[in-house]
Length: 557
Image (cartoon, rainbow, N blue to C red; front, side):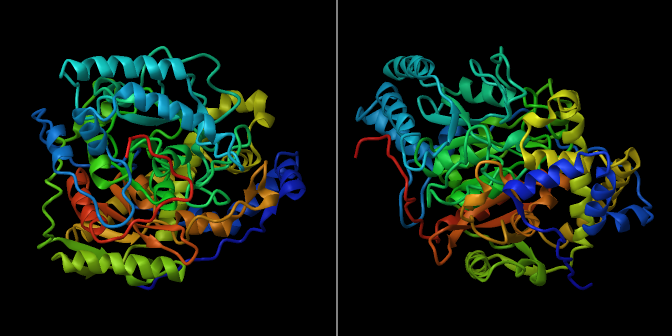
C-alpha cells in the first residue's frame, strides 16, 4: 500500500481578501463556492464511495474492569525526575519548597499575580489569559497555606498553580470558549475535571486564551489577541489549548487543563515545548465542558514534565456518573516512571508517513525514536489505510458537531464570530445528515483496520506536527488567515487519536534551527495511557530541554 497525500487546493487568504471570500461564501451564490471548496479537498470522492460498516456514533472502545483503585499521587511525585537541560519548575519542586518552608502558597500566589500583570505589559502582549481574579487566587492560596500549616495537604497538588482552558466551567468565571457570544454569566459550578483539581488543592488562577470554539489549531483570537509563544513571542502557540500550553512553558504553572477535539492538547504542547496527553475517549469526564464536539472531544493535562502530566491525568481521570462515556473505562493506572526499560514494547512506524514533515522535525523525531530503541523497544513497520479518507471523515464529524452546537447563536450573531470560524461553519452547512452518517460508518471501518495494526504494535509513533510553530504574519492580525497547507501540516498526524478515541501523547523531542520546539507523538491502544507516559518519559530523560525566551519562576532560588 503506497502513501499518498493530496495537496490541499486553496489560496492563502488574509485581510481584505479573506473578508471578501467570507462574504461571498455567505452570500446567495455561496453554496456553489462552498461545494467547489469541499470538492477540491476530496469530499466528492468521499461521498461517492460505498461503505460496508455499521455506524459508530462514538469511538468503539473495549469495556474495562473497574474496581475503583486509584494510583498513588504521592508516588507519582516522589518518583518524579527530569531530563537534562533547562529545569522547569515542577509539582515536585513546589511540594518540596513548601515542605522546607522556603515559601508558601500565598507567596507563590502573590508572585503569580505579579507575573500575570506583567503579561499584557510585555511587548508584544503575551495574552496567555483572558480572565484572572487576584482575590479569588489569594483566597485559595490562604486556604492551601492553612492546610499545609496543619500538615494536612489534600494532595501533592495542594497550593500548586494550575491553568484552566476557557472551554470548561470554573467558578467564578464565565465559560466563553473564546467567543463574544457565550459566557454571559459566571459558571455556578465547576466542570467535573476542574472539581477534581480543586479537590486536590490546586490553585486555579484564571481562564486561558484559545481560538474561538477551539475550531482552529492556532493561537489566534480576534477578541483577546494572539496567544504568544514563550520560545519566541513573534510565533504562534498552536491551538486550541493555546494559553494552557503557553502558561506551562512560561512558568506560570507546572500543569494546565487542555481540551482536544483535533489535536488541541498535543499541537500547542509540541509548539510550546511541553508535554500534552490526550487520554482515551471517556477517560476524563466532559461534564461541564462547552458543548462543542461530543464524539471527538477529550479533556486532558498539559505539563512541564511527564510526571506533572501523569499527576494531572491521575487526578482528573476516572468514572463520573454525569458522563456516561466514562463508565466503560478500567481502573486508572500510572506506572513507575523510573522504570526505563522498554524491553518488549513494539513501536509502529509507517516510514513515508513519519517522514512527511519538515526535515528538522523528521531529524529530531527520528533521534527520539532511536532513544526508545536504545531503551529496549523494537520498531515495527506497518501500513495505514487511506489516511486522507479518515482525515476528511474527522472533518465532517467535528465541523458538523461544532455547527450543531453553534447553530442557535450563528443564526443571529454570525458576524460576531471570527472569519476563520465563519469559513469552517459555512462549509459545514453544506454537509448533510447522510455525510455525517457516512463519516461515522467510516469510523467503524477504521476502528477495525487499526485494531489489526495494533495487534502487531503497542504504539504508533509520528511527529506531533509536520512543522514547528510559525511566525504570526502581519496580515493575519487581527482577523486571522486561511492557510490550508499550513493547517494540514499542523494537523497531519493528530486526527487518528480523536476520530478513533485512542490515547495520544506529545513529548518534547528537540528544536529546529531557529530554536522552536519539536514534539514526538505516541498513540496507543484504548486505556493504555500508562504505557504512553512511560515511553514519553524515556524520551524526556534523553532530550536536553532549552529555556523559553519568556519564562518566569515562582519559587525562590
